[in-house]
Length: 128
Image 1: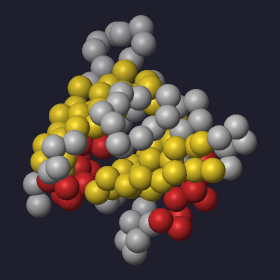
Image 2: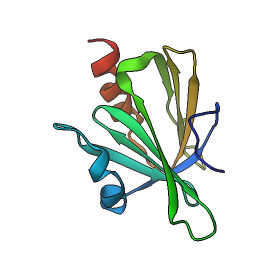
Image 3: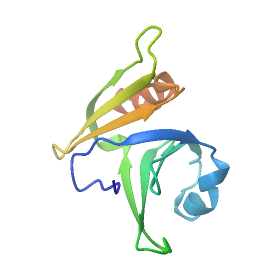
């Protein structure tokens, strides 16, 4: 499934290393901004920085065409996190974010993800 912030979508995201996306996002980062966590679907990626969420939508057969979208934490009205349950066979967590323009994004993470870290980063902006 393509990652697009133009629709309310749920994504099956698995963690990847920051190095795997560093070249993709370095040109987009502003002073003091750094990539903190990165996730991937089959081809698309989502990067959480200390200031925003960046999606990389890989398009076309060759994957050379890419679309980048950015959701700044400063535009978040509220958010919620759901942690994995105890001893689940397939641990997953979810993040729901409502933005000031009423857009709602839902992220579904697979595997060992520190959803608390993501919640704390967002809290730095929502509660400031």
